[in-house]
Image (cartoon, rainbow, N blue to C red; front, side, top):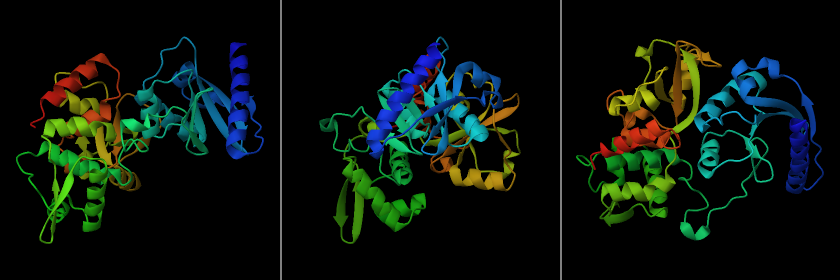
Length: 343
């Protein structure tokens, strides 16, 4: 009975909001069904509702009352499972989300609805009712680097972690070291200057990137603009990694830098493009859900090898990929991880 009342209220809220957004009436009709297609553990965590919305079927996964709230990482993995079964038109419904959860869901493009407060449906519409105070930062409109954010973040993280190598480098030197075109290096420069993280100097025909602050202070200043390198995460059966460009990531990497246990499934990182090629070449066999013997593969926005220490992702990228994990053991390990950076 409580579920029916909640769904009815959600229907009305969606009809009002979407009607205002599209400027015309929107009818939301709810039907039950299709729950049997999903793994049992998802059925134990969510109630599944099938809704007809804008002439398409939208599946809503309502978090069950009394159940432990999944972490953002767990929801991202669950979203991949549900998409493989039901398609792209899905959304998770929660009674409340704290800011870090909302930000993480947006980073990994997990659609969600908080009735009466927030709606994030990238396949339909985006509505974020909570706005940051514009005076907090001149880049408030975009909390992360504007696309292409990957190269800009790579350059900054390279500078922060290679104090033994990097000085006042010209754009040409940065291009050569990181393998970027001159045009990309110029765009990176514009992004970093816009966010107040560096400035430029011109000497003759050379344009130099200059970072005035010490590296530790710059890291703290840059954190609000940096995002997780992980674009999506999924499961795969064990495969021969000798033919792939990969690094240890997630808890697997954290266990190599700190004293935390590795966990039950090894975690690897690959760039999105390398992962796609590996799947096409059948070097990676995807799985819709976790099983004994599964591995976890994170698809990164940039090649982890560019910054990696051997076969382990670099410390700062690892921190960014896990900083939204609210687990005391992981939080403690991440603090230890940062202490090991040679600024």
